[in-house]
Length: 306
Image (cartoon, one colour):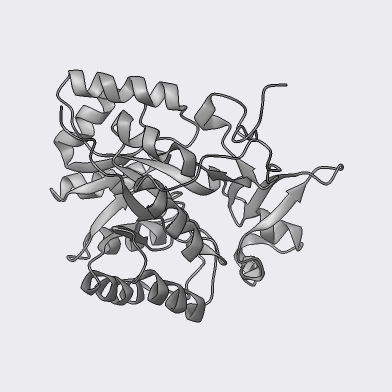
């Protein structure tokens, strides 16, 4: 019986709007982290123009020299002809594989016979769809963030039965991307129109908390993107992921403490992560509900049945 392949770690694209200096510092540190794959690029809002494609390519070349596989992530919501022009440039970059987060990116890449990876926003739920995209050049796919462990286990088993062996990636850490809108909720919070937002989302390097009247954080507003208020954390699920046939665990960048997060997940895939302590207090900022087939806000690690 062959050994279970070791799970790889991937760093997702930065979902928030940071300064050029912050991006540079972050990826300079990331070059030394034990992650195999790094996603770069602006996947949320086309108005975030501090970083151009050439800037991302420059960072990508430096990371590639450090031994990382670099992936350029496309914008998830395409709203204008200008967005399409930028998408064409991204897909035609000639250096790095592209993560398609929208069907327009899939069309551009397949028309040009270019390999690509599929992001979670493509909503891939069945072997038939995965087979079509694999024939079109898909090299890897990310499971939808709301897909449970049970459903993904079944899907991967069905894929194996049909001879469809395409690496699968799971969103294992970070605020879960839930929705995108043509409206900018952060700009609206500051009573500014979207096209004259003055880039107020840059004031919130980890999003703008949206709380209930009871002060519970339910969502995280990130410009046109809505994220979960809590961070999904599947570090204790890493061994099961590898056993299921998941190939990669995606870690979504946060502005602080990311080196420690990577270190913990690296330990988890080596089998050296301590078991959850049932007596430890549950961190209210952590969730794993979707993975366990429950409401997304739920947190089950370390809890005893009530």
